[in-house]
Structure formats: C-alpha cells, structure tokens
Image (tube, rainbow, N blue to C red; front, side, top):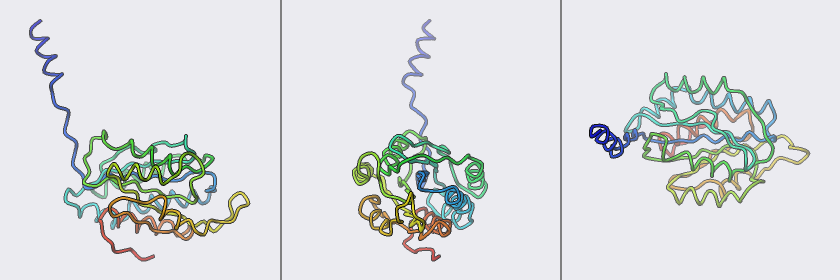
Length: 234
C-alpha cells in the first residue's frame, strides 16, 4: 500500500515534458468561404503545396537558430466555422516539409458561407500554448479574398492576438472576378493593413489574382520564416 501511495505521489509531482524549442510556431489560416470558387480554391491549395515543398522555404527553416519550425494548417469561413486540417507538425528538413504538403494535397476541399477573419484569429490564438512546442516567435498567417462580414470586427481579434505576443501577417487576394454580383474589392490590401495585420515585424504581401497566389505565398513564407525584409520578387 505504501508503495502504491508513493508511486501516486511521484506521478502527481512529476514535471510535464518540456516543450520542444523551435524558431517559429506558424498557423496558416486559409479562407475557404464561398467567394472563392472551385477553380480559385484549387489554385490556392496548390499554391500552398508548392510553396511548402520549395527548397528555398526549407533553406529558410534550416537557417534558424534551432533549424526547425512548428506548423499547422487551418481553414475558416464564418464566425462558427474553423477547423484544423493538419495539426501541429515539426518541419525541419525537405522530407518533413514534403510529408506535410502531401497531407495537404490529399485533404478534401470544403466551402462555407460568410467571411470571419476575427473568428479565424480567435480560433488560431487558442492553438498556441499547449501544442508541445515553444517558439521564439508566434505567427498567424491569414490569407483571404474578402473583408470580415461575420462575427466581431477583425481589428478587435487582431488586438487580442498582439496583446498575447502573437504577430499576424496577411496575404490579401485581390480577386479580379465579381463575387455574387458585387465588384471585386480593390482596396482589400488597405483593409488588411489597417484591420488585420499587427504585432512585431508584421507585414503583408498582396496577390493581385489567384493565378499569382502561389508566388505570393512562397515569398511570404520565406520572409516570415527567415525574418528577412527582402521581398522575393514575383
């Protein structure tokens, strides 16, 4: 009996496993609202797959102090619609990057109504802290083709994230096609600048259309992983 009690006491006082240090904890938060048609959704998904397997992204990862990052892929639409498509994964070399991209390529694509950038940010905030990693930087990477039209205002969620030490970078897609009869939002980049991005080193790269999205996300990943101010021109 004494041995059992001693064992229970040991289990109760044992320290939890230490989190693995990484250079970056990065949430890729991707818009899957219905303003993005099937062709655009395919271009968006393929853009992420190609970028994540690009050797320049892997080189950026390897260039860090720890030589590794933690990555998760989230899709979002309305204030009540967010889901983790691929959970937190350690990326440290070409093989792990290829494996992550392979899962992404095989995952089914979904589409949902409304656009809640605030909901995406609020959801992503909760993914940090108990994921087994301890990042030098915490970043939410928001990409989308429209303004917040559901849930609380985007800048309120952005401010909450920044207050917790999280940086939000943006990739607004200036969609050149009408959406539900409305003209494309030519000033979406201005909206992202004022209401979405924030925190230390926050930046955005604008995709002028979905065909350009793959090049834009490649440039963005390299910049936010390597923490360089040098844009990859495209």
